Length: 96
Image (spheres, rainbow, N blue to C red):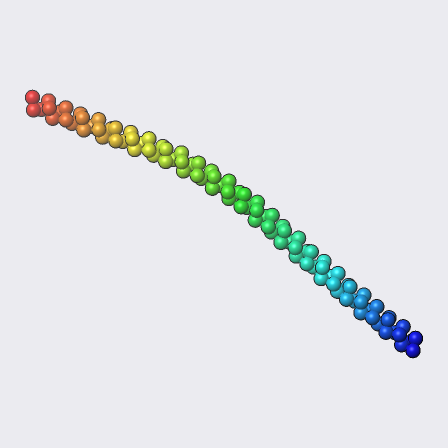
């Protein structure tokens, strides 16, 4: 009877050790996968930071270009007004 109990305990110990090794391997695999995901997340964050910097730069460039365009547009309107004044003066001289 004691022999049967010892055999049962030995088998249970083997199953327990096998289960522990299996569980340990599963944990190690999950840790490797988690580590890989963390690296991917860090790379994505770095890329996102780079994209945010680009967006900021493009926004600043856009503002500068809009200001330049407004200046050019104002200059064009002033030139047209000057041309219109000159044409009016020429018209007055021709009539006189």
